[in-house]
Length: 189
View 1 (cartoon, helix red, strand yellow):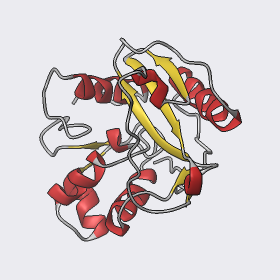
View 2 (tube, helix red, strand yellow):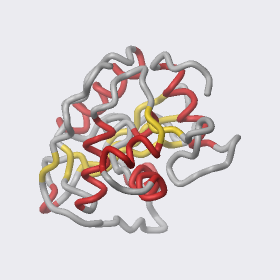
View 3 (tube, one colour):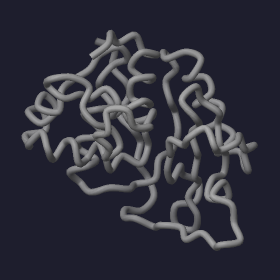
């Protein structure tokens, strides 16, 4: 099993949602948008106390056009995302804002150790962090840094499972999970 380095969290904890004005485009929420086979990946850079850190990565539908990076950090993130989309062996090296609860970070650290091409079930991760599968699923759904913290590598005991708080079998997010796992060489679940 290939291991990923543990994510490096820095900055502050907690949620700092950005409100969008009716005069802004949804694309304005992102410092960069990278086209992907499943749609796009939006990059949000932290502001104020989280300045210098990745604030969030977001899976976006095809309706979002690519957006050139606004600064050096979003350019670095966009380059690494684009490289991963071409080669699943790419390792991310990005400064992540310290977001999430202590439990979520514990789950995310465990998930970050799952190598490309491998999967664990929610139950297996739960045993490793001494918790319940549903709690692991909730922590996966709360992941602010998909791709960097690869929650797509966590599946249900009986198959694919949900993704990003979505259980819709033919939904956008489950389609992203399917694409990511296939890209990493995981056989159909």
